Structure formats: structure tokens, C-alpha cells
Image 1 (cartoon, rainbow, N blue to C red):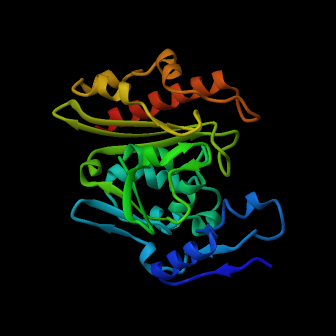
Image 2: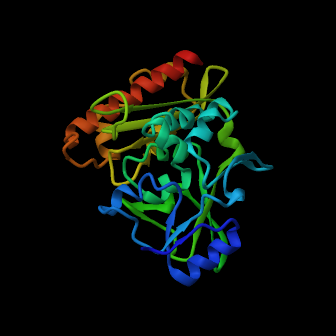
Image 3: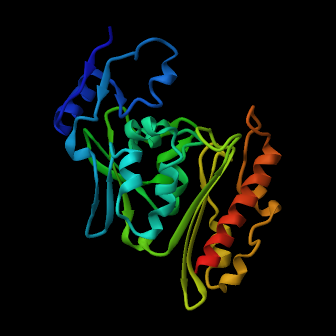
Length: 279
């Protein structure tokens, strides 16, 4: 049987990690299915008993989302409308049982191209907090995610929190995904958009697309081209050719690459139209 550690302090957890090189578990909703066997291969470091790693707090600089905050926690959290897309994504992460166990850190460190939590957090300009032997460091989420199943987390580090800056807490937001069925599905394409309008003009815009590249991407060029434009400019603002330049989807059993481009284009335009109508 594998060695299993479940400390209740961060200091103890870091000691276990440094001493054993354990596999980190933060809910196991991805880790256990990936084992391909009847038990986890260890040693295993379960961080879900560390109280300081769970919860959402308003800080002087924005918001801090603890690593082991669950998707169920996020669904019921009182947050500004800019976080609606994150809460909507939380409602799409598997069934209720998965939402009760699955964590933000697990979703990010698993680094699936179809991770539902990533596009909303990218659109919120999120940073990840990592703590290890060398101390604490923070990285933009876009830098933390290197490739499919690859991150910048070092072997001796734990992802301890996600930080959202105060400037990203303004405006309205939406999340939308497409799958082969309505519920309990891995995305073919998904989008998260945050929009802020001032005096009828687009003052801030963030668009992120997931499941259409090895990592989710912000559509920075599209965003910059629309800042300062009237809200009416959001009507069919993105065409297929522009989307094809920004993304590099694969073809797999769920959808081929051309279909993913079409789907992402349609989803982005639907969300932009929805937000424009609400502004």
C-alpha cells in the first residue's frame, strides 16, 4: 500500500513534499481516474486538511482564492458580477459530487486543455501563488500553464492560492461551453468573457477560449481592437479567420479542428452579444 500523508499545516506539508517527493492530491477527482488502477500510486500528499488553503477572501489588492477551495464553494460565494463566469464554470465541473470534492488547485495543476476553470481565471487576470523551499513566488496563470499537462510548478512547491487583482473585479461576465451533451461532458470549446462599459464605450474587455489549443488562450488582439469602440461593435466582432489565427485546436474523438474553430467563433460572438445586450 502507498504511503499516504494528510497534514493539517502548510509547514508540515512542505516538509513531507521535500522529504518524499510525494504526489500532491487536492480532491483526487482528476488524480484517481488517471491512475488506471485500484489505488493511488504513492507516496501521496493530501493537502485538503490544511485549513488556511481553503476559502475566498477580499484583500487590499483584490481577491485570494485558496488552493483547496472547491467548485461548490465558488458556486455559492458572494462575489462581484465579474466573477459570474467563474461561478458558471464551477457549475459545469462534473456532477455535484465532483464539485464538492474538486479544487481550484487540482484543476490548474492537472493542466488539462479542457479545464473549465482556466478560461474564467485567465479573463480575470489571475495569478497563482506557489510556495516551496525557496519561498513564495507568484506567476500569471498564463505563464504557469506551459502546455497540456505541464505547468511551472517545481517538484518542491505547492500551489497555495489564486489571486485576482482588484482591477479585474469590474464589469459583467459570462461563461459558455459546448459539449456532446448538456451535462457531465468534456468541452469541445468554451469561452469566458469579461466586459466593462463606460458611457456606451468598451472600457475593458477580456476574452479567453479553452479546449481549442494545448492551453487556454486570451484573444489579446481582439480585445485591444475593441477597447474604446461603442458597444454595438461587439455584434459579430470575431470571424472564423481571426479565430483560426489565434487558436490551434486538435482533432479528436469529440470534434475535429475545423469544427472547434467554428464552435469557438460562435460561442465568443454569442457571449459578446449577450453581454452587450445587458450593458
